[in-house]
Image (cartoon, rainbow, N blue to C red; front, side):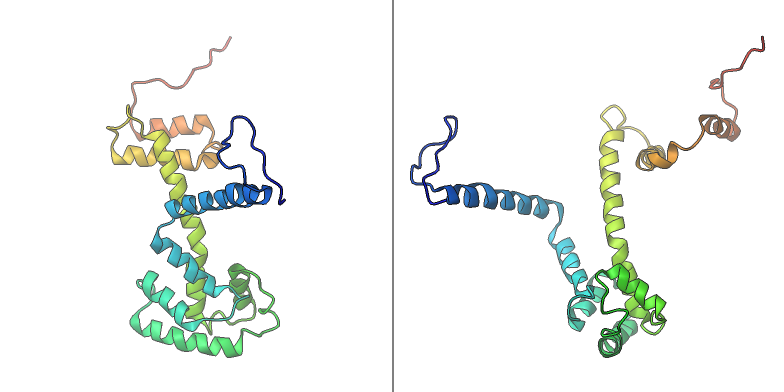
Length: 213
């Protein structure tokens, strides 16, 4: 690894003192990490990054940080908690830390989902209902993110330059069929045509009438 790295003919040869370790560590490994970080920074803005960071505070494998969890509820879920409930959440978290965190059934939880399920199984989801609500809100985050990404990807395919004048209702219907195409593929074509005809009289004939012969 300490020997001089020899570049192939089409690569740069301006540095003859580059070691093999430097080439793989700096020019390949660190360059790949920088590229990944740049891609993540483009996909997730500062607000989304902070939301994900605060969500980690609910990881059952980590020590409970009451202040950060309350900040999560205040900054991003203010519509789901009243001022009074946010004050109660802090007291609830302090009690939870002493009462439940070392529970034999919960201390082995490795994910937020397992923690949510464990609280329900031991009957503590009602006692710590505000914490349970916050966990359920966090669990919907990946689903919401994926849905939005699929919607924007579908919009690029559906709303082309030639379809730029379609109205919002028609665009919404096209996107719904495209995004949920796995479900749409299960609908029989004849039933779709029947529903289309039942809406109003159509001049176009989509059905092929069988001739008895």
